[in-house]
Structure formats: C-alpha cells, structure tokens
Amino acid sequence: MEALLNPLTPSQSSVERKGRHRLAKVRYETEMDALRRQQYALTMELETLEYARKLRSSKSVWEGFARRQALERQAAVFENAQLKKVLQHHADVLARLRAVVEPATMPHMDDDLVLDHVALPRNWSNVTLHERLDAQRALLPSTFRKHGLDCQHDSWKQIVSRVDTATGDIVLEISTCLTVHAGFADVGDAMSCIYTPKQPLHVENRSIEILEILDASCHIGQHVHCVAGETYRRRFARKCTALHDRIVFVEQTIEADHCDVPYTETKYEALEFATRDVCQWKMFRCVRLPPPVRDTPALGELQRELMASFAASMDNVIDALESVVQSLARTKTQDNHQLRWLLYEG
Image (cartoon, rainbow, N blue to C red; front, side, top):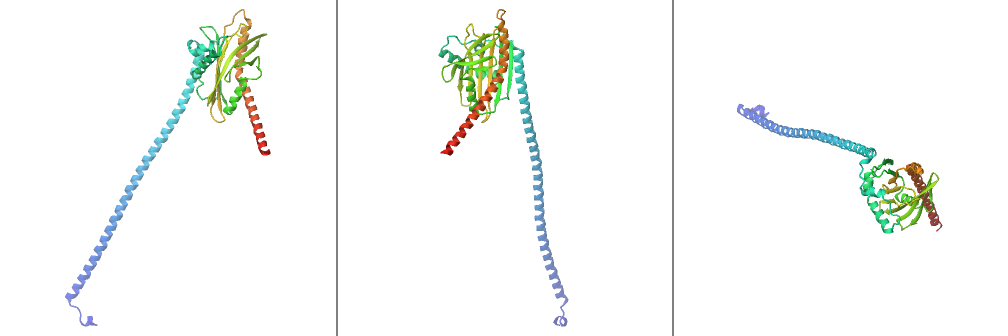
C-alpha cells in the first residue's frame, strides 16, 4: 500500500534497475570465467591424452618392428645352424670317401702308422711293452679325430680296404661307433668280461684266450685261426686305462713266430660316458696282411677268411655285449631281491 500510495520517483527506479543489471553482469562474467577455466582444463587434459595416445601408438609400432626383427634373426640363426650341420656332415662324408678313393696320398712316416705295422719284439720286457702301449694310447685322440670318431654320432660302421704302395701290404681299416643304451659302469663290466674271458672264447673260425695277466691293466692273449686245415696264432698285448668318463683299450701285435699267422693288428677302443643310461663304444682297428705268395696257397684263403671275420666281428661283439649286459642286469636284480629279503627277515 505504501508503494502504491508513495510511488518511487523515476530517478530511484532507474538506479535500482542499473544495480540489478550490474549484479547480473557480474554474475554472468563470474560464470563465464568458471566455464573458461573448465574449458581450458578439459582442453589440456584432451591434448595430454592425445599426445599419450600418439606416443603409445608409435611405441607399439616400434615394438612390433623389433619383435619381428628378433623373430627373423632367431629363424636365421636356426637355419644357419641347420645348414652348418648339413655341411659338416657332407664334409665328413667327403673326407671318408677321399680316404677310400685316394689311399696312396696318406703319409707313411706318421707315428700312428709306424705303430700300426711294427709289432712288439718277441723277447719283450714289461718296460718295453708298457712304453709302446702308453705311446699308442697317447695317439688315440688324434686317431679318432682322423677317422671321424671324435664326434657324437649315432651307431655306424665303416670298412676301408686299401693297398700300401710302399710295402705292398693289404690294409684293412675298420671304424665303429656304437651307441649303447645301458649304464656306463654296466657296459664297462661287460667289456671287461668280453676282453678278459676266464675260458677261451670261440667265435666262428677263431678263438681268443688269455695267456698271461701282467697286472690289473695289462695282459697277453692270442687269437687262434683255423683256415684250410692249418692253425695260425697271433699273440697280442692289450692295456686298459680307466678314467672318470671313459675307459680306453689299446692293443698291439707281438712279433710272430714262423708258425704263427703272418699279419699284424693295432686296435684303439674307448667307452665314453654320454648320459646316465647311454654310453658310446668307439673302435678303430688297423689290420695289415702281407701280399699273397705263390708258395703259400693258404694265405689267400686266410686273407679272405680274416676279412670276413673282421667284418662280422662287430656283430659278434654287439651280441656278446648285449648278452653280458643282460646277464649283469639279471644278477643285480637277484642281488637286490636277496638284499630286500634279508632286510625283511632282519
């Protein structure tokens, strides 16, 4: 009523309107400032996220490239290793074929070749025998390396027959690598039973017997061959050396009497530890037969018989080795059963 009875003057209403307008303008500017600050914060956050996304995308691209490069490099290394293995195998095959095709190129003054055809003296002494066998054992690594027996391969056998152009002798070289799936100690015991038989061991047309045991590592034996109604004997000396991961056997011929078989043989053997249940038996033997003579008709037949016997000796040794290993395994099983029974009884 008071406002109606006493209305404001025009000057007062204008001042109030301007005041309200000023307050509205201040409130508008305050809200706009807040919105601008919020817009700036959101813009900065958006730019930060965009920059991080670009970095992540670039990093993933480089990581993918590096991963592809690593996979390609790994595949190349594997392919190179496979190719190197194939080339090494081909080189070994070529080396063996070259040894067969070019026998005359082999030097005749090497120490191992001298040991191959120079027999031990008939009136040998223990000192001379051990010196010769120790010298032969020292040549075993080079001999194995020369004939491809220094690598870990599967079972294989190679027989090379050639003629020595210097002496005219017929040379028979037999290289053997046999993977035996049995324990190292069991195979070592089996080889000891085979190489030092208590009774003469008869194989096809020949027999092997021990004549004298010099010591724990060395013994004297003889091979007896029956060919064309004649009996030929070859005496030999064999020495065994046991190491922590291998057992080495070396053998040389003792100078023959007039009634003995006219040939010499040198043998290198090694039993090597591979794994707990696998070992490798490697052997290289060099047999030198004199050339046939007209007044000795049995010699040619002897040579043929010896070649056949040497070629089959690997199978004979494998059969004997398998038989002895199985026998030792059965003995161990029986001993274990007896021990368990005694423990049970106790």
